[in-house]
Length: 255
Length: 331
Image (cartoon, rainbow over all chains, first blue to last red; front, side, top):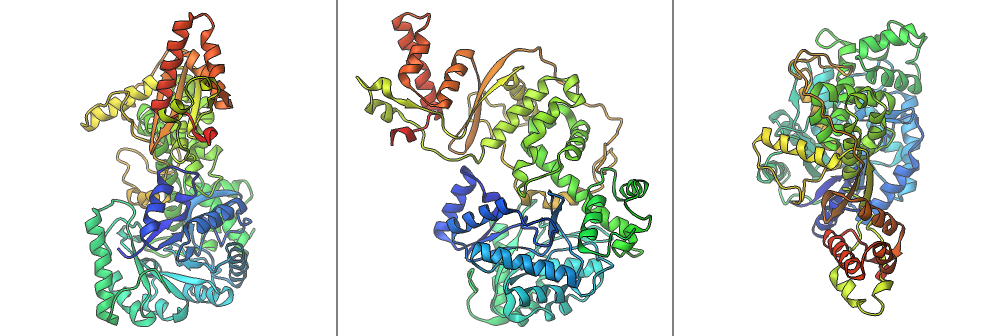
């Protein structure tokens, strides 16, 4: 293993095992903080206590970078604990960009935003998702955590070409890849992170490597957990593909 | 009424639909009755097709919303879930989430208000002891990631032995709570744990061994809940109350009996133990911060000198072994 990504919220604790494990891992490996509750697209105000905790965790952990999702996660002061999709409109674009600026100022560093899997498209949307994401990165200076599995899942759920998505993302904005498995529910694909990375996602990963070059890649597997060795096999496969496509050694968490 | 033309309107409608307890379509019907949405609001909000109509697409989010939170509550209240059985726990979670939707970005706090909510719920009238069980379980979950603190050890005490021993400052570690209960929740917790272990075929453990911690919920654990959508055997699988004909387990019954319990974390393991009133009173004193001589004074009342000394030694030893006294005042 070259580096680890941790869910930020799980370590916004005062003590106990989570922080102890994080410190032990951080002492030996680069770590990336990956949040799920920033709710950057919500029309609720940014949650100030949450930002305080995130900033404190970043100071403590000194992560390679901090990321979250291009989504909204709550409304009216309540949280869904889910990654809810946004309408891709000019209004939403301006709203998200202004909030990314505020978060980046607060943390004193740029953040990366990840594309989420989705099951709906909003009637109001006037931009394809990749243009929306690319424009947010361009206007705010944030990075992109490109989840290859999420592109595939959403492409199947909405009927777009996943390669067009990848072609629409600016090369220089991509900081990290995610790879993961999903579940086929018959009428839709569900982003479950409980299966091996399937072949179509590996194929899309190869396509992404050809477009973006050497980018740190992480395999997500957070339910129906396999042995560590099985998980490591997935990571090694990502490395082998990168070496085959690009040559040379794989990347640690760096950009 | 067009709620979909602005980001605020779209998020507001989306939220109302995916958090409606009976599902998206009934949720819309309720909004229409209340004059808060048009009958065609779902189709105006999101696209759909023959393969997956708009309402079914929103239902994916609605189901994930509820089952992720249900699983989180089950992780924090495992014995309460066992005592109630699947259907009653599901319905309790539905009622709870309607009254107290998650108000914190971290799932860790989702169950914080469940003990108080349960105490006023109809189920508490059928089984009052379960309200105390819920308090015990939440306390255990809450201490899982409470602040660390070096515990007072025998060496610390030995260094102050002799003339200054009475000055030994005492206070409890941050990962310590004293509970005053109306029922013997620790006994009920043990009984339910043994039942779970018996049903799963694992060996029962004694009450004094480190019981498993009630791990605080992690966000990622809920990500795959939707894999179970529609697979809850024998029951309607939606966010509202479930009704099925399978027999529910009889609810536990205990006579009221004032019980004190100490709950604490040593290392990464959370423990609890029923204690007598005298120890509870002393721990209350210590939790506020005191010195050993004050504890000794309390124990001297009604005891001979020899028996008071023995009592001080016995309790101090137990607290040192448990790791519930903080070493910080010595620094």
